[in-house]
Length: 497
Image (tube, rainbow, N blue to C red; front, side):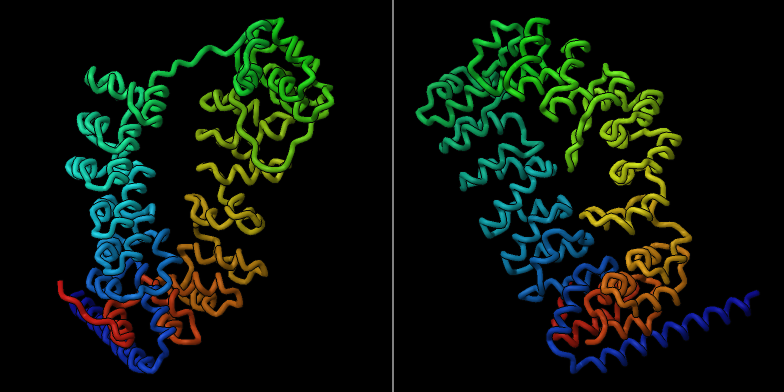
């Protein structure tokens, strides 16, 4: 047994040596490659998930960083890459990096104190936008920054200590004072500070106080109150949601304004019998609203001549309220109304029998919307991945139920998307990956080029001018030695730790 183990180790060592020799030979062959090829390697290595720290430190010394605006602000970088990118000397690069929603909090924290004011502002805005928890001591420093704009944005930082936020209500800049005042902070201000805010000479501070002390007046529910209401938005809200008296319901159901009849048709407080009188309304939106009511039977619903406009529609509130009721989900999934069936696809805990039913629904968009559910079946995801032409088609390949053994059967399919799907088969052999790296479709070739199962000789070939050098440089199976050799050829300097 020991002799067999020794033989195996020898074979592995010999194989590794051959790979290294091939890498060195290919790097030498590419020494005369043009600078455009060098650019492709650098951009690929920057987003290579397996690139070690020392490679990435070299990559992010390159100035200008190749095509950074096309990938730096949205691609998910490895922690090593993010750390190296934060140290780039070009503030434009650091600014683009600060916009990246995938940037680790530690690196975003560094950028909030960047030497460049624009980078600082971008980083702080992103921390507020994505509710990134920065260290408490850092939020306090940002709230005391010399720049008023930074103090203004600091008021929105999660984790900012309460006493610091309250102190900003006394800031010299009126924009900062206004941003620090809301319904939480205003009652907690010292009496003299609150009095000063209420009498502030700047109108935006006084408006902030007014918003903080605003109390919503109940919507009108009677005909008298409705007619005396002057705010058109409140009238429309009342028609849709207020607990209307029978008299106001009848008044709105016969209103000459289509939007008011539409509101009455939607309002769950409108009596069912009155709502059904709108089932033959001349306005199609009114008829559609009646057809979506919870208190309408399936027979009544089917008798309404409604039209479903194209595009997405909100899930009816009453359907969403039943998301945790399996029996209700089964009933809604069997409805004749396509918008109810589409709405039920959003339920996070769909029973398996409901999933099966919706996966074979006659309506294309019921099936498509089901693909956004965590419980969408594999077969449906593949079907829609191959057929749907909307922007979301590519994301289906990253659904948790998409990739699985068996997809390799599509390697010769006429549909290039299905050939692409074959690469998501974990059991696909390296020979299949290599064959697809020669595919006529760019997307298929590119995906094969980054596949770590791609045989090494083909991977090296793709680094050349006639291959896909950027995608090949992203391949996590690329040996570290070859990564360094590519950077050497491109003239990128070595850096110390």
